[in-house]
Length: 194
Image (cartoon, rainbow, N blue to C red; front, side):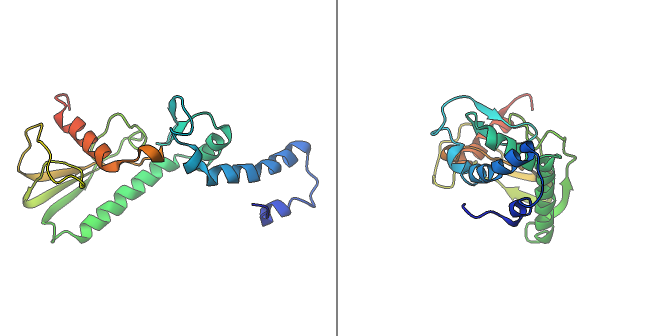
């Protein structure tokens, strides 16, 4: 942390205004905050409202202005949306390579709404798979549990599967992706409106 980068050293010999010089002094602080952001941006560290940063799926716990500014700068120009789109395309390519082994008839990449990548309270399919013969389905349950009570009626076979990809960046302490994805699946499939 004590070493300065070449970028900062290049400004030492230049004539800078006081505002520019104070801006350079903030660079090490921002680096420090970004490096430790997974540790300090947690519900166990800061108690308060959880706030989602604009145009991203990043959730902040508490007011850390340096971290907020840095993350907004990193994800400017709709980078979060572009990352989501890129992952969807990569996923389609992987599935395309497994066409025969998974008995896939066709892969349909859905038109994605611009806000889909960071709107966490509703969702839709990113990719729809159609198969040559029906796939056998199991009731969704966390991998760590061997048997769970089935609460809803669940089809045994299907010839169409939709995939909903979601980027998340949040509290490390509450990171239980199995339960989160199962809960989302049950929300979307048991909702009579959708």
